[in-house]
Length: 115
Image 1 (cartoon, helix red, strand yellow):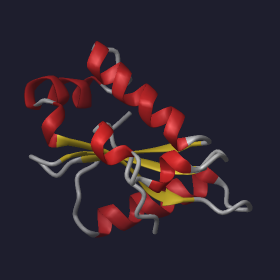
Image 2 (cartoon, rainbow, N blue to C red; image 1 turned 135 degrees about the vertical axis):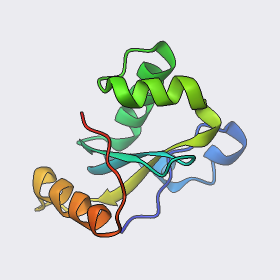
Image 3 (cartoon, helix red, strand yellow; image 1 turned 180 degrees about the vertical axis):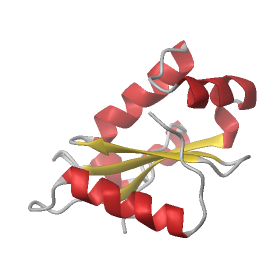
Image 4 (cartoon, rainbow, N blue to C red; image 1 turned 60 degrees about the vertical axis):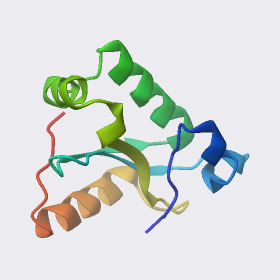
């Protein structure tokens, strides 16, 4: 699994390899409520671009999951982590990787947000 974290702290961003890559990074983005432990997994053709869009839509109150949006507004940015969960190799279908990762987290008894 990838240990790339999408970070919004400018002091940490340069140490974050995902921001230094010139190519698009395909994979699964994980949004985790660190207070409740609930997560949402999303497919992405470009994890850096999409993580930025996710953060923007959460901040604007327009994210696609009303349940996650509500938790974000009540809990705040500090207790949410938006990170790269798994990087897809060139041949891997994102929908298959997404199902694998969902199964993995359900096996760990994690509760998933619904889209």
